[in-house]
Length: 189
Image (cartoon, rainbow, N blue to C red; front, side, top):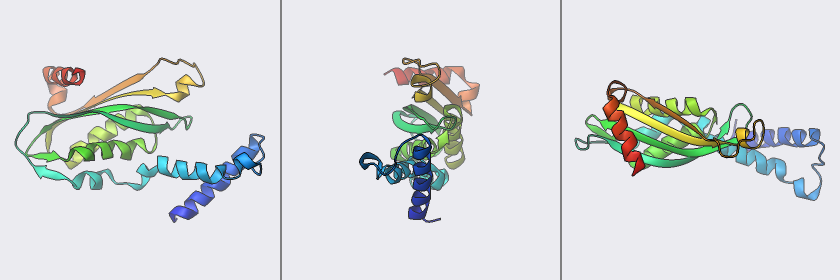
């Protein structure tokens, strides 16, 4: 289905939902809301239309330097698959190069591929780690994600100061707790 067709179909459903909520979709403030909302949802879920391996393969270079490469505090916005409410935060990624390195911006793009889907933070953290492991020769990958979830802040338990941290790792990060601690120390700088 073409982009415009998809957006128009989503807009029809949003208009129906707004009407079910008791609003008049023909009043001035809501006339363009279904289309605007549909365009926003299309953008917020663009990760379904992107291939993480293709994103990463654009910038892999030979390299034999650093023992650990870390990109920290990559901001992201995602949508909780349980409530379709936003969650947002930061991801930090570390890897041990094995003859290859990746362009730094590709790690931020990788985060966006998985964040821009209906998602849960725990799975997103693992998917980022697995995708980097699949596309790049490494001795290990570690991913730390900290986020705030509006499904906990504006509904349900309504805990305003809560945040969630998830970590996933493989390779030498899994077998070497000292290496994991080194990664966490660098994040504090």
